[in-house]
Image (cartoon, one colour):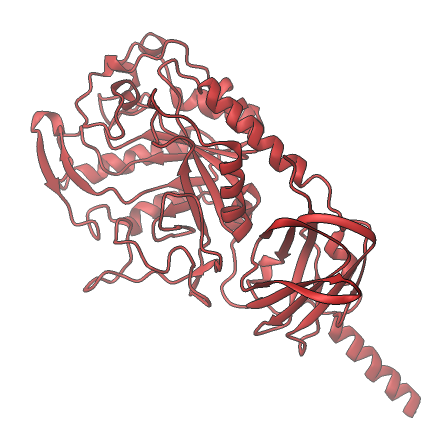
Length: 483
């Protein structure tokens, strides 16, 4: 009888140890997990402003100004794909108010231009090229309209919402609905040529406006400087803070009940807020050139600069949104194409070979069958190693069997269960003793640690030193940067 009881006790303990860990904190939605998979995407700016050689159009450009000599959506998207971009957001309407699709909401649209003899739909051409290339498609329609005579009045919101409905309803599933914080100022406004101010906390009725997004495009992540799904990192330099939490709690302006786009930059935006109320990871937006629109005197960032931004955005659990600016032909300049191609090859070659893929790994603690350390090198982030519930610290020793040279360590948490790790360090075996080479804090969706000099060793140790709950890691990688 006692033997049976002990066996049942052992069985219950074993079964318990193999149960999945409980989720921790705010969790990503299905659409947010899809966004994390994209990692790098592009934001295309192409309106009459391109032909004026300006950054922001005033709203008074003649529609006939928009006349690209040889628009080629497939050329633009092919260059983006070569750069490793997995999604494209098109600015369907910028602050100048010019709509790139044959909208019924305003006469200031592409049908009044010479493009395709007034019968074109640039949104459709880009959308089709994006899907043909196997990328995801998103839309940005600016709420500020410097052309519309009704902007600033109570009649404009219905126009803006109707524009969103057209875009949401006619161009397939979107992975993002992108919004920024530009909220009124000087403009053409149908000839008034004046400054118009609005209360950005109430004018756009964001609760109901974003309700249209949720109803018509439930898988579209809403980006703005305060969320709802993806937050702005707080700069246009393309990088997050070294410690970066995917959780955030937007705070309403003083005297208001809801946080809205266009508020002053939160000091917490680059880093996020540990144990924030919502899963709201950061987007790091940065133009490929100096400006968001094409200017002939500018050059694109070098592939080395882009790789560094990749490490400081995607490599810190954020997303990299790279601004693409077609020239007056309606194509990406050869310099841009080359920069993207070289950057894409650099990323692809660097991460093609995980030097730890054939390693043997031992853990100081393991949850049980189904959560073993082999999950860390199976190249599948849907599987993961986990510690038992009462073990909030752990060491993972990676035996490479022969000396390997690397300069990048990659770590990934299993984020469907939340962001858990708060501190860790990395050691290598050098001259038969362990040498600490890095102290870190957040991991999240992905953490890429780049060392200034290559390291050569047969053994690496990852020590998780602080977590409020048991640990879950999906992938570990060691890589050598490819030049």
